[in-house]
Length: 154
Image (cartoon, rainbow, N blue to C red; front, side, top):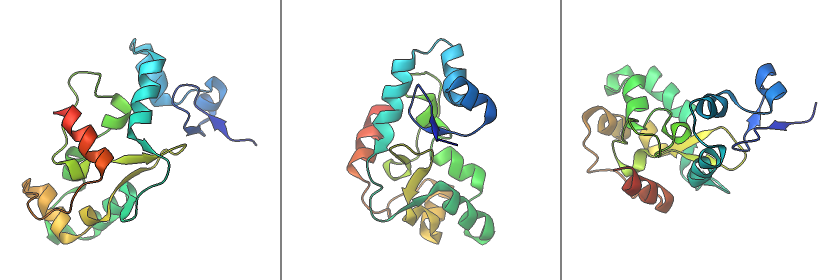
């Protein structure tokens, strides 16, 4: 079966209903809420990079590291809160979404993918402590796109 892409944001869709609609569930939900499809697509594009920068890893990998190392003191829920939850999909244009804890917590999305990527540093003990405490003084420098998105989201 050929890969089906969401007609709104261009990400691959696999769920039966999404394939039938050629629209992912998240984009469909936003469209039903009255958010213009072009706004959704442009917001997704704002978080997308053609290639994930060196030193980034999938949000799922950070999740697993935190879940397997509770002694670090950062819960997965705190990581989700620090990284803005579903913010890339809910758009900064929609009021009432959470803020990022720090510029380094802004996830990037590889173009044509659903995978959100974070700096691998967040999957270390130092990164976990920073997310748990909100103290990012030891954080490495954020990617240029992360800084740009973070400054707009304030």
